Picture 1 (cartoon, rainbow, N blue to C red):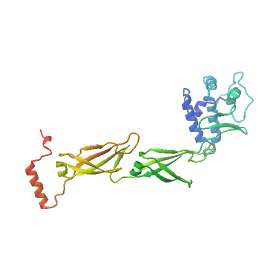
Picture 2: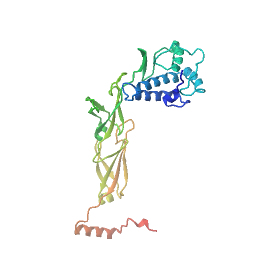
Picture 3: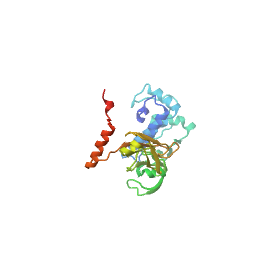
Picture 4: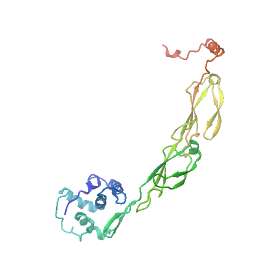
Length: 304
């Protein structure tokens, strides 16, 4: 019989743990499933992948196999140790059959994983793989994210379905909603649908995670003498007091005024001073008089 490198078939190293072997098997099983893959040799590769995983996922079979691996290389012929011979099965290589027949009485012909189920039928082992997952972007407003919203979502490609989806309040941009069983169909059931949430551009706010940011302009006299401002938030308008002698660039925090959640976000306000344009002689004279009265020099601390 011919020796096969099962580690090479699954694309893993000989010291790889069972979790990574399982992960590699699932990836390759999806890729080469005969009902999905367009590869000309998909069916043969799919059987090799199943064969390799059947041995490497079992500690006893893997230990026996590793004994061969120390002495034999892929494709070489060898005579198996006594007690390895089985009755033969056309669907598996001779090497696999040695393991398969040895473990049949203890394990049985059927094995299963959380994602793939294997069964022997008509002398052929097939993976009952789920269908492919789908991903769709859904665009919502910041207010929708704050209050929650229901949306109709059209599935991509040739799938003509439309789904009514409830988007929970407090969701953040880039977060994904998983709809189990709404993906493409497959022998083992449908895949899942993932909705990636995108925020529409807002005319006032910027968003960072659950925090929102707002820039607010002040007139020079508001900044100098202080004032009370009506400030927009995602849940209505509130009044805040601006202290006297506020400088441009000052930041204020409104606690828990960001997106809701177990730990709500905050709203951050950045104040900046906006001066009236000197577009008339009267305004220019007022500016000159202000300069003379105050003697204000915003750059005096820059000089030594």
